[in-house]
Each structure stands twice: as C-alpha cells, then as structure tokens.
Length: 464
Image (cartoon, helix red, strand yellow):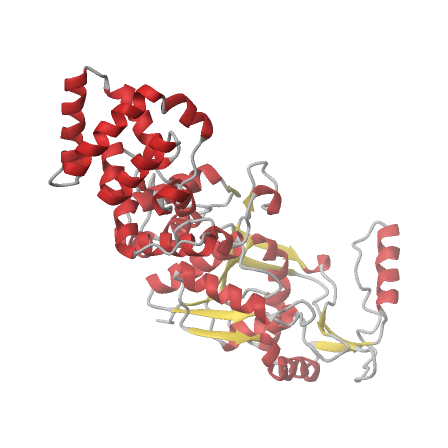
C-alpha cells in the first residue's frame, strides 16, 4: 500500500492565517491518522514579498499549534534548477514552447477576445512558430485544443473542466524562473504527495496542474478543495472580522488545543461532537467528514471552546502560560506557585488567559500600589463599615489557620454576633482587598492572597 503523504505549502508573504492553519490541520491529521508523512514546504518564489521574518513566524505558529512536520521546511527558492529541468523536458517533448509576445500584446489579445464575446486569453500566436530561447521570451505550456480535464474531488465529487476555457499558460518567466503552477506540480510529484488538500480558491489551478502532471508522466495525487472560511457577515474572512493571524490568538490568550478543536469544526464534523482533544481528532478525523459548504468564523463559539479547555486544563501549565502573559504585559514577575493558586479561581469563569490576567491583576499589586475604584470606595467603605472591617482584620490576624474554612467561620461568627447580613459586609470586603466590586469568592480570594497581603489591604482600605 502506498504511504499517505500530505503537505502544507504557505507563502511567506504574511503571517499564518486562520484559513491556512485549518488547511495545515486537515493535512496533518490525515497523514498522522494513516501513518503517513506531513511535509512543510515554503513557497517563496515571490522573492520581492517573501521574508525570513514571515517564514519564521509561520514555523513558530505551526509549532505553537503542535502541527509538527516530518520533512521540511523545503524552500522553492532553492529548487529553481529542478523546476527548469522539467520545463526543458516539456520543451523537448513538445509539451511547451517559447513565446516572444510582450505583456502588452497579450493584453491586446484578451481585449479583442472580450470585444468578440469570447474568453479573454492568449491566442496561441507563438504556439507553432518553433521559437528558441531569447531575451524577454517566456515558456508556455501547450494546452490541448479540445477535451476535458476531469477529476474526482475528495470533497466536492466529480469536476469537469473544458480545456477551451484555458489558454497556453506561462510556466517559465522571461527571467528564467518557474511560475507557481509548474513549481507546485514538480514539488508534489518529487516529494511523493498523494493527497492535495487545500482551499477551494485553488480549485481553478487544479486543471492546469493536472495537465502538467500528465504531460510529465507523473501519477496524479487525489485533490480535495475545502470551502473557504467566512466572517459573520458571510463575506470572506478578513481583518475587519477580527484577528486573522494565528499567533495573534496566542497573544490574546487562546490555547492551542482550543484553536485546533475550533478550527477543525470549520468544515469538518463528527456527529454532534463539538469539542475534541488532539487524541480524539487523531482517532475520529476522516476526509469523509469534510463539508461542501463554507464555514462561518464565530468568536463567541471560539470563546466557548477556549473556556472549556481552560476549565479542564492542567493548572501548572495554565499558570505557566498566564505568567508569560503577565510578564509580557506588566512589570510583574509572580512566583509560579502563586499563579498556580490563582488559576483555579478563574478556570470556571475566564474565556481567555488574557482575560484571566486582567481580572486577576489585583493579586499582583502591593497593598500600597493597589488601584481603587473611587466610586466603589465612596459607596461601600463608609465610616460605620470601616469599624467592622477593623474588627474583622484583628480577628483574621489572630486566626490559627488562614484558609477558606477558617475565614468563613470567623465571618459567620462575627455576623451572628453583630446581627449583620453577609451582603452588608461582602462588597466592602471585596473593595478592600481587590480595589473593585468584582472578584472570585471572597474567602477563596483571601486564602490565595494570604494573611499578610490580606491584612495589608484591610489596613490600606481603612485609610482611604
């Protein structure tokens, strides 16, 4: 049985975006599930726009998502001689020819065709002229004059393309460099790619590539074209819909496992299942589950997915990731064990790690530098209430143990003694220890803060 080989071939002219990451994921899963190979190929033939920075960013994003590749990265910019050897082969066998027509002449041909109600394309002027190499001359593929290109798309089913819709397209530029259509076929054939799974914006390229495969005698891979991802307005996903770069989601506090679980559902389904671990994806993914219609990117659904993986995540790992965000966005450098105590307070409520970092910011301040909400102070820290807080502070200081149960028992005893309702003291205590009216449970929060920090905040609140 032939080994399954898939590939992901991004162009380093920009960051890895959501659509590209989904395509990479589908290829990765199919290869892994079948004991095959997953190849990373950097298609950097556009040297004017390709940068090392973008290449590094794409590879970083792949590593963050855990889409490890078996071979590569290969760089098309280093394979020009290989492509040209195959262009020369087509020239020798009559499958291609030199063309001396200028871009202006070709555009004039297209305008003439349009004016006559025909398909705007190159008219084949140089097709049978037998030209050799020369300045400004390109090489064109000799497209058959009649017939159809037919292939069975993995996702969309049988697709037929009339060759009369195509022209003799360029496969080598005048500067001697091969164009995309040529390079991608040679690469996929030489690398043994068996399945080409990609976005359906490439579907129009497939007939041309199949003709090149056939002309060079290469076996055809199976093609599958995944419908695009749309924004909530049902238009092509773009920056106006939010972040499109994968690594921006890392910076925003999303977990890679959540991104994988959400991305795979944009175009693939497995019954009514909505959430998948990596192991579950490797077990359940199938090409048969890929859908034929476009998917809509929904931030609310992504947030729901991410909150699930935060809720069920490993606390030390989440604390480490939270620490990265805190250190990169603030001047604080909290101890790992302190963060590990904070994380469980927010696991049931945080949608992202960045949100967790923002909500937990009060834990990181010294009492003297803790920012207070002036309106909350004025409303809740009245002179009468401060007297109660002062008594409670002294009782907390005397507690043998400073934990959730001890604090709760002390508060209950004080409320019974004074006849106060808990709600009379809850918000004043919250404002005293956090500076705001929002926090996790009071006693859990004080336990994590610890006796020293909590008492320091009580004393600070009494001076406001």
